[in-house]
Length: 66
Image (cartoon, rainbow, N blue to C red; front, side, top):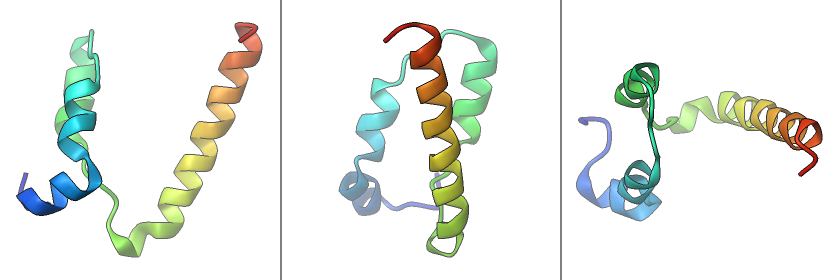
C-alpha cells in the first residue's frame, strides 16, 4: 500500500477497518485487494458514493424489516 503511509493509516483507522471486514467469497477478496482510500480531489465522488450507499442500506433495511 504505497498511497498511505503508516501514520495516515493509523490516523484514519484504516488498519482497524480492514481487520474488521469479514470477507467470505473470492470476489470479496478481489475487491478488498483493490481498495484505495479516496484522495482529497475526489471529494465529490466520495459524497456521491456515500449517498448511493445510504440508499442501498435503506432499501436493504426496508426489505428485511429492520
